[in-house]
Amino acid sequence: MEGSFTKLLILGTFLIIVDVIPKTGSTYYIQEYILVTNTKLTWTDAQSFCRTKYTDLATISSEHDYNVVKLMIKNWTEAFWIGLYDDVDSWRWSLQIQIPNFRSVVQDYRHWQANQPDNAEQREYCASMMGDGFWRDDICWLEKPHICYRDGEGDQYVLIVENKNWYNARNYCRHHHTDLAIVRTSDENQILKSRLQDNQNVTEAWIGLHRDSWKWSNGSSFLFRPWQEHQINNQNNSRPCVTMRNGGWNNWACSSTFNFLCQKITVSETTPAPGTEPATVQPGG
Ligand SMILES: [Ca+2]
Image (cartoon, rainbow, N blue to C red; front, side, top):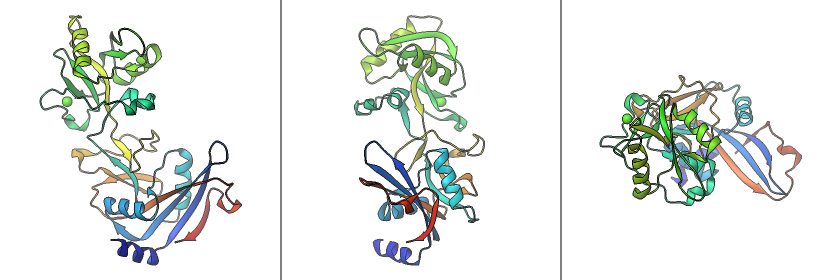
């Protein structure tokens, strides 16, 4: 594999854009995008190529990054892979995004109903608890009561008997408490179940688990999404990998072959040379 990569590199035509992101003190992240235009690979092979030769497939995490790439490809007519893919099994707690240190806490406890989550009609991205304590995935825009999590001493769960969609429920909990409920153990699940059963008007409530499925190859899940919701639709989970072409994004089966965009990130302790200003286009390789 290494040999074929070397051969591809020798034949390769690369455009490199260097982008300098100042960090605190004298440390700089130098980010380069490398468009590989001489060969077409599957998304997974492109990922391997980029990880071997650079850092990873490209992450486009901001309007700035997007504009840099758009400028870079403006004369290129074909689509190419970027690092974005749809990981439909990727459930995560709202709280862990808000408080990064929670990543270190064991939080893979799940208590799904039988045959759930089923992502019915590919539209169910949020989780709720039923009166029997079991969970199901459902459409985030439906309005339900919800359970907030409250950090600190004493009772950590608060049932809000007011119908809101999952996003508004999260906003409410973040404003008035800490976040939507996180459930880490069967004991905690039992407490939530009791909370529902104590209120006869409530048969189901949102919890903080949701399917944040579009992820970048480098593991990040930046919220920057330069597409309209209807543009990208991973019907039947059959088209989970994303290309970019003329500034537009599209999704395909990962086994399709395209050119691809790699990213290289290096750390520098010294001020980068003037030649490494953003949007500098140069042949490389
Ligand atoms: Ca469901």
